[in-house]
Amino acid sequence: MVFSVSNNTMKRPKIVIIGAGSLFFGRQAIWAAANLPGFRGCTLSLVDIDAGRLDKLTALAKLVAGPTGAKIESSTNYRDALPGADFVVLSFSRKNTHYRRIECEVGAKYGVRSCSGDTIGPAGIFHAVREFPAILEITHVVEELCPEAWVINYVNPAATMGIGLMRHTKAKCIALCDVHHMPRKKQSYLDLIGQQDLPLDAFDMRIAGVNHCTWMLKAEISGRDVIPEIRDAFLRDSAGEKDEGYAKGRFNNTITAQLTDLYGAVPTCTGHTKEYVPYYQGHAAIQEKIPPLAVFDCDERDAWTAKMWAEIDEYISGEKSVEEFNQSLQSDHAADVMHTMVVEDGRTYFINRSNSDCVEDGGRAVDNLPEDAFLELECQLDRNGPRPLKVGSFPLGLRAMQYQILDIHELTIQAIMRHDRELLVRALSMDPIVNSIATARQLINELFVREKDALLDWPEQEEAGELAIASSAQASDSPKLQLY
Image 1: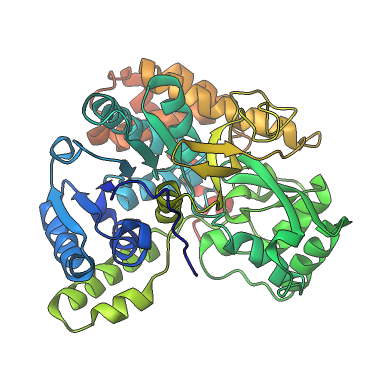
Image 2: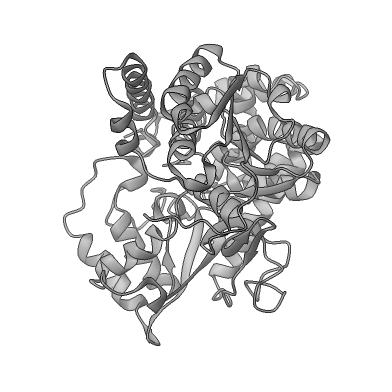
């Protein structure tokens, strides 16, 4: 990919990565500091509470980006890193796989199958309960120490966290997800329908929705609707799909075609969206032809993480070269967003933000959702931040789904801010994959017991809540709830 640099490039930026040792963005940030022209000579400040991991990432950064002119800093205290920051990237999750495993297994025990476990359902809600207080604390310190910095939140659930920041901080915040990275996302649909040689600007693609529940509402080539072709291509590729592989990827072609038939719009993040609807939970009297969702693959995630750390050791030791590191990665969504804000190259990106200040008319990007609806929207971007492009309207059915998910996220933030379990019960009871109020309450009670070490600032629940866990053990005996 060729990156252009305008004459308006801002000063060499200082980029602070909080959670550098998570590996989700730490390696990509190092690659970007060495390879993106607008970052040449930048300050890359790596922060992590795990000193051992931080030392390894710092050594890698000095090896890869140091020779290109980047200044490398590191600290276990984010306050020490923030002064002078232009961008503060939040990319952390304490003991992510440990807690995600608990949340997905407890959910499955009560009939709630989470193939991803980081956005909606009990796993998504408790991810926010665990992580949002730290996110909010950091943004308040940003207000104090570097008020002009942009906070780039990369912590899931992106929409819940983004809503919380929109409501409770004055810091300049952007919430990101890497699913709709441009221009790769647009090119992938052209490749799918055999139009790979078509110029990207000839493809009019409009996607919007709450993060991880986004939909292609319009797709035209020279005024011709190609959504039917996209649907047919997914159906074609569904032939021979098997019940194997990563949980988020199983039967995605079949489900994409099926949901397109149902709603008249294409789900663009099916690996997550299939978790938002009740159809694939396995409870219906008439089952779909595909099996219920598989539960998130925590063992595979642990293995992937271990492999990444082993590779980092190989780069640090010299067993693998810097050239191999640079060739193994490509530019990341968050890095590209920051780079465009630095060099103002005119690129557009999908960014989670409020449904307001549309480029074309200053109004709503999605006409039939409120201005404060927090949506993933294609945006023009410069140093002043993102402004969404016009999308149009959601069809009936999908609009209701968007409202429902937004309300769940809003209630989750309210519950966190008030430490109110009853609001959590309301939020989870509204979830389309939760089948009773009693189930919601039991899930919440059990997860507070199982994750009490991460939730010490919440008040203790009455003893009855904990006792109910033992009495409900029979729920795990149902063959429908076995983990794949």
